[in-house]
Image 1: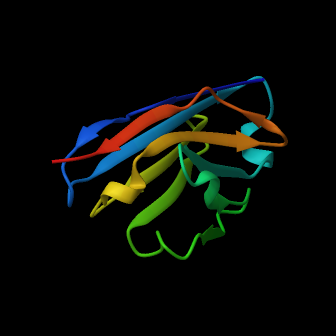
Image 2: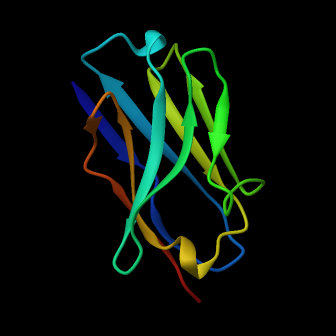
Length: 110
């Protein structure tokens, strides 16, 4: 099982990023996925989840700004992030069934 995230970077407050998570090694279409983040002070936070059927749920502080999506043809899960704030700075990683990727760093700073 392998999950590999990409798309992070440095962005100014109010900016946007789209993170990707390419998954291999297990049946993608049959599984749900989540995005979480790790920040130095706040620790680990769950951000969003998507079921195998496409149902989505979000942490309250990101709802309306972040969108989780999946492309079963590409074995990829996405996290679209809009109107980024400094408090969104963290290492973002995707996960499923107890597995997670190494993460991609998002830094929001002017």
